[in-house]
Length: 266
Ligand SMILES: Nc1ncnc2c1ncn2[C@@H]1O[C@H](COP(=O)(O)OP(=O)(O)OP(=O)(O)O)[C@@H](O)[C@H]1O
Image (cartoon, rainbow, N blue to C red):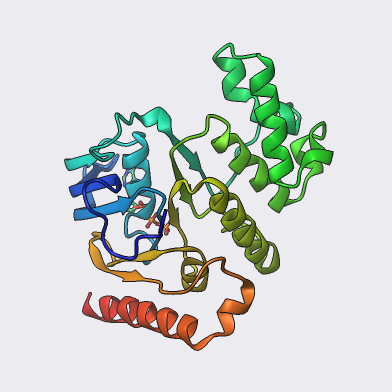
């Protein structure tokens, strides 16, 4: 499937957000307008990154799509071609939230265990994923015996266990050191390249967004609106060397300028 660099048509659409707004009520009785009128379509198999200042509603947006938070107004749907439900979604958080008393393999098998799926195919899938994530030798280790990067790989594996069509990632590499982070990004691209799931990826790092994504959604300061959606015209497969190219620098600069101008406008 070619990578869509344009806004997807209805047929290609995996996620459609229509005028999403979110207003929280705080414990003290006040309100916080986190999102305002966000509309966006994400194509089937597309990798879309979201960047924006702290507090502009990025996590809120993912949580609404995942069904963990209910929007105040607007709609989320998952395209015309699929009878998608939320179990076709997988989510990866900044902290992998592993159960410390379960081994790596058992952490991947958590949700299947809870659903009574103890068949050989499920175990096979877990082992295959551990192989893809470079963790096969660690399947019987416990989370506290792993590095931060390895723990996050387990978190990604767990989100992929039920083979979701759409992967929502909320700053998945935010807690990692810079070198591990770059490597994890490239590894994620390798995994993504194998079956091109639709990915929505929140990050604070503009270079990370540009290295990974087909399009980068730039949000305004709170209340979060879409400032712009920037296409990344870099060829795939992407490599770290891409970061040193003029094209890469130009896209990063464009996004940085957008964020700066939104910041000074508020
Ligand atoms: N449950 C809640 N109750 C009240 N306000 C909330 C709640 N969750 C989030 N908010 C507020 O909504 C706004 C958006 O929060 P959100 O976590 O979505 O932003 P973000 O862009 O992901 O931030 P960051 O980049 O710092 O992680 C913030 O002002 C936050 O304080």
